[in-house]
Amino acid sequence: MARIIEIKGRRVWDSRGRPTVEAEVVVGRGTTPLAVGRAIAPAGASTGAGEAKSVEVGQAVRNINTRIRDALRAMSVTDQHALDRRLIELDGSADKSRLGANAMVAVSLACAHAAAASLKKPLWRHLAGERRVGLPVPQIQIFGGGAHARGRVDVQDYMIVCTGAGSFAEALEWTAQVYAAAGARLAKRGALQGVADEGGYWPAFKTNEEALAELVGAIADAGLEPGTDVSIALDIAASQLYRGGSYHFALENRTLSAEQLHAMLLRWIERYPIVSIEDPFAEHDAAAMRAFTKAAGIQVVGDDFFVTNEQKVRNADGACNAVLLKPNQVGTVSETLACWQAARDAGYRGIVSARSGETEDVSIVHLAVGWGVPQLKVGSFSRSERMAKWNEGLRIEEALGAKALPYPARRLFKPR
Ligand code: 2PG
Ligand code: MG
Image (cartoon, rainbow, N blue to C red; front, side):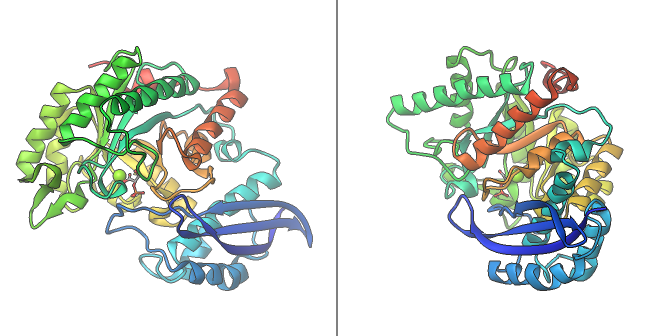
């Protein structure tokens, strides 16, 4: 059995040029090294209040190199559950603030990589065990807004879902066409001003709704059918807009009550081919979420609302019908998996998601495939911290070949 013989933390840099923490886990038999696993903690900008807390990067590195290293050394690397339980006990806080969620998630993921490497398997295969798996359906950002674009528009993510694509590779082909067409439309009116944090175009729009109309235009310009081939997904990240009981849309200088926001989103769903909305209301407003999920008839995703917390999903009672899964929101691989299990028990869908601060780390793609989570959100179709993940999906799709489960886009998003 491969046991952990060394753990090392180091300070590295993320896609926003901010420091973050990387963990390296060496496993072996006796003192002979067999395999190494490595992972880097990402970081959010629009973070939920209930997220596990990170500590300062220098402190996270020290925690890995001392307390975590001492606690996990000699443990079996293939027992992820026991390793994560040990990390949780060692931290001992309710919000991971002693060891730091950044230190914990880097180590937890690095252990998973090391376990797979010691078995000479890709991580997705190791996680899948004997189960048949396939590729997830991507949600890909075209315009970035909200906290990722200094509030230039209020809505955070304008994304596409290639609802009619027959494979992951085809979804990326179509996305490349839509991304190029959207850029060309902005350039034509002199509004191409670079990209936001996740690689989506900087949102030079007069209203939040104008971006929706432009997105439909870009899909059509790309020669694809809006609503059939390619549909729209939004992340409102509404907690960021919530002030004193209502929602402030700064771009239009409007303040909406929950009821008015509900009505506006239903109007958008009627006018545009929207198949998914994330965090339509603030993270504490379960009643508004529940009413909207009931009325909308589309996928409603909880991100800040669930913060990848198993218990919050178990208590949700129909607020949302899908869960965003971000390992660093909760701190360990096992707790992320438990949240996905809770989602499945409740009949909710799942989407594994990256953060706005990312790196070359592609672990989340392996989690989505290995756990059979049918959707994946990684940001846009530019910047290599995003492309690394899309490209990893292509490699996995190629490796699976004819053994892959049918690509689930058309099943998940039947035309309305
Ligand atoms: C989100 C993510 C990714 P952040 O809100 O879903 O878009 O953003 O990592 O800033 O929380
Ligand atoms: Mg979100």
